[in-house]
Length: 194
Image 1: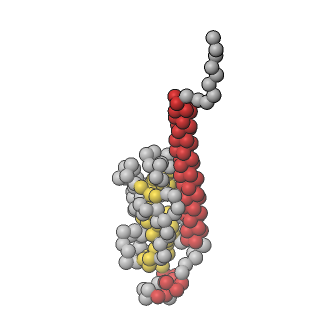
Image 2: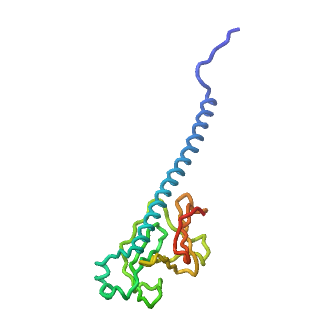
Image 3: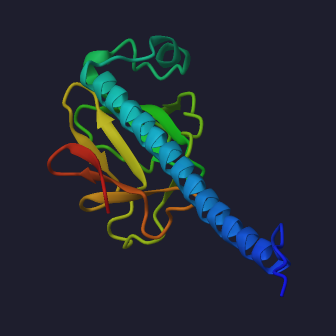
């Protein structure tokens, strides 16, 4: 009896190895895509945090665009001691932020829905990797406009209490990646995990 030694692999063995390699590539690719999305979102959250800090510091230190304020012809610049200034922000679904320089007479309160006492500044381009959403937040906690008042470090909101904005990405939508929370009575904000 003669034993014949085969050299090579059978078709079944090759197919099994190819299936295992395919599964490993599929798992690795989805993990890498999730990692890339997470890193992009983290960079976007850092940019958002940096932008909010700079806007709050600009308001705190009363840094204003004098040229825009003079050009609008409202007379605010000539009588600055009679007015309070603030920076109003609106967070858009595409990740961009609209901002305005607003003013009010010292005797009046802020009317955030009134755009007649505001000058639109350059909008902030979409912050990379993140978008804003209020879909899963109760109507009483949704942020519309947020205003940082100059010199006082106060935050004014167009909601009766604190408000929230979900920070989402392509993968992290429900639950959101982070939540941006503005505290009306405490005068500060934070970016936290939901």
